[in-house]
Image 1: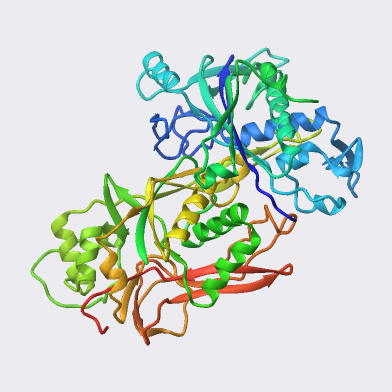
Image 2: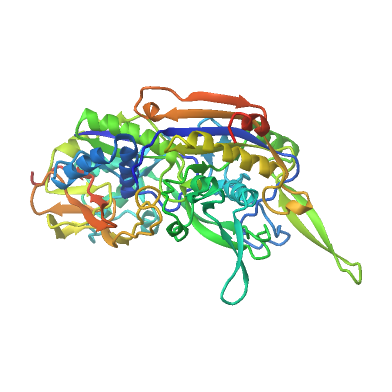
Amino acid sequence: MNLEFKGTYLIKANIYCLTGLHIGGSKESFEIGGIDNPVIKTPISLTLPDGREIKEGIPYIPGSSLKGKMRSLLEWQYKLVKIAKDKKGNIKSKFEIKDPENPNKLNDVAITFGVGVSDLKEVSEIAGPVRIKVYDAYPTAETIKKWEEELGAGLYTEVKTENAIDRITAQANPRQQERVPAGSEFEVEIGYEVYDEEDHNRIRIIFEGMKRVEDNYLGGGGSRGNGRVIFKDIKIYFKDRSYYIGQSEPQLKGEYKSVSEALKNFQK
Amino acid sequence: MNIYKVDITPYSVFKSLPSAYTIFGAISWAYRLLYGEEDLIKLLNNFEQGNIPFLISSIFPKQDKNLLLPKPILKSIRKSTNQKIDFKKFKRINFIPIDLFTEILQGKIQDELELNLKLEEINLSTTKFATVDNIPHASIDRITGSTGEGGELYFEEIVAISEGYFFLAVESQEIKQKIESSLKVIEDIGLGGNRSIGFGKVKFGKLEEIKQLKEYFTNKTDRFITLSPVIPDNKINYKESFYDYFTFRGAVDNNYDFKGMDIWKNKVFYLKEGSQIKVKENSNYYGNLIKNQKAGKNIYQYGLAFPLYIQGGNK
């Protein structure tokens, strides 16, 4: 492939939790009275470029959660989910990498989000590098302050109790789930690499993915009200090749209050 | 060659602990994106011909503002001492302050016992540089849209590192500028694996010249401590070296030229950072940059020593 690196976009936005958010983490120890369903937390403390101190054990949104959800919803939106049966007769799903309108080409979801090694053999077109990089989203300074003031020092989550009711005896069987409380905000950063001219408009698909997430959910327990989020205060920067060799600065390409506003800038 | 320190601040986790060969690979790809394949081939040809354009060390931690270096592997000898030494505690120390490291380079500390006595004096706390963790991933089943029915929960081992730095020795001002630009690209494309889900996001500091180590880099003797993993070559006298080793099998970055291919590099044998190496003959570089052919293209495995020479040895 003849690579021509043209630069990178950086999309910055805040993700605001309208309801409690549960992105499952690992349970390291079985403490007596411990929560069965913890949320994912930072494994190490770090200081971000803007000076935010992120302590170890603070909830965050992994890049993989946001990228995976956006991709999954976009696959359905663009009719790229194919249902087939395997040799044993089990129903299996498959991601269609071809563009439904032009079968010789790869679709935008495949080019932007990447394709599996084995799938690429089906088309002659070269996908090029995966365009998207969804970074881990850490809470805003205001959110950390709010958690510490309202939940108590060292507490960043709420515990929601849910019940399973036995259909016959009506007996309740409670379970607990840890959630990031509603009203929390995280700073999202998405990188997007540009390798051909079409990529400048193809970035539209990321905003479509964000919009689909707003009308769906992020994390677990979405059908029970968890994980309803909106994106706000969106900024798009572009760093062209000259930035990397010290000849220019990142250019602010647009500032938008919402995803809908940002989407108006791209051709469909 | 001038030696520069490059601070590295990680903002996310890594798929595996980034080493000198990880940084070399990342710089090579970034260089390729900025300056094209032809320019990269020229650069790599220089390495092959022995005109080394740059050398990279592995990443080491900092304690506050103090630089730490890998604890060197010194000769282990038995001799009686009146002082009580907590050997177990020192076994757990992997990094030592740069000032103590330079005492070893000056030949003031020559064996393990002398180093332990010195460590007892300065009461150094153990620095935890890397934390290994397991994080859960949930794959969403396309049909049900759920991670429960048909979806899958699996765990992946990740590495989180604290703030650190690495050394870079460059042969010319032109190479220095090109590497600086390549590092800027790495800040935006990431370092190591799983980059599209945000792994390997880093920020590099400005290149700062380190004069404190320059004499140990340029005054060559027959004994040095390496700050990068070394693929052994025939210029090393193994009998008189003190080393630790590991084997490693890296993967080729298949995001660019090797799209759609799952290519593993050959398994290689490395001498660890901190190994003390005695050389048979003087050379302008030690270690190997292994070249293999895969999918019709050359693949390189970086294993050149970043040497700091112990003074007082034979020149």
